[in-house]
Amino acid sequence: ALCSRPDPVTGEMPTGISLANPPELFNWLDGTWTQNDEYQQDVFELVFAGDAFEMPAGMAGLAVGYQRRHDSMNRQYDINFTQFNAAFRFGASNVEGELTTNAAFIELALPV
Image 1 (cartoon, rainbow, N blue to C red):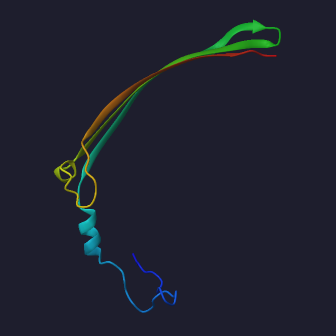
Image 2 (image 1 turned 90 degrees about the vertical axis):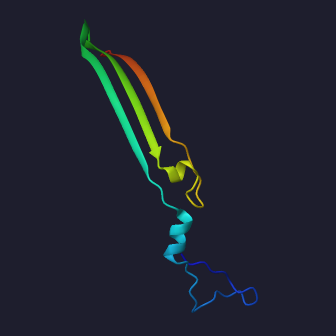
Image 3 (image 1 turned 180 degrees about the vertical axis):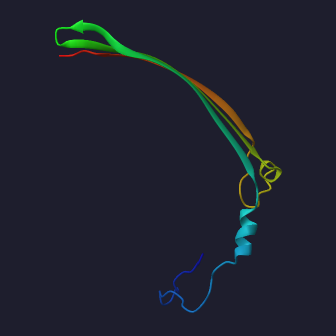
């Protein structure tokens, strides 16, 4: 990355100089850590659909359904990150969580 600013007297950008930071500096500032992420989703779904009854304009349709989703995640950081040793970056704690969602629906299609 090049970092430069205009000359305060002339207002011109400097030329012919290298202000790029060496890669070693960025590696030191950034620090090194690892993390292991594990995500899982289990889904159960049940749907019934078909003709329900006859109407003058045709058959009425009916659909009924249910879905259950269970999501879980587990994020594990290495010791450098959990002990806030990642140089100039913040640290964090390991994270674990889960969520269960239930959904149901009923649909009716009426011919007009």
